[in-house]
Amino acid sequence: MSDANVELVRGIYNAFAAGDIEGVLSRMDPAIVWNEAESFPYADNNPYRGPEAILTGVFARLGTEWEGFAALPEEYLDAGDTVVVLGRYRGTCKATGRAMDAQLAHVWRVAEGRATAFQQYTDTLQAARVTGAV
Image (cartoon, rainbow, N blue to C red; front, side, top):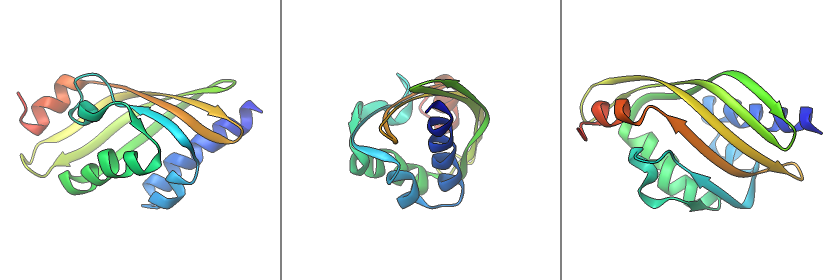
């Protein structure tokens, strides 16, 4: 089952990279709990509950506030019902023109073929500097 979980999560990143937001959301459980890293700009409404909250609270903001934003997975770690993704965020903040190139670690929980929880870890200081928050 864990191979299927890794493929589910891989499919989320592939859909996101292709701009297929419906493909991303369709892989999520209706009751998914999504947490942005503490002090990350989009952690203001943690936890996001359900795909619609994630769409409006995270993805829509990424789409309007960033140029070329990408979550680029480099490694998938299979831990059964948990999948950890290591990689990088890249993009340019439209408001400041500053570029971000930050490490990321995402922890996904999977049950019955759907993503049920997400926890982001990243360089929040870099994000704050790039967005002009500090």
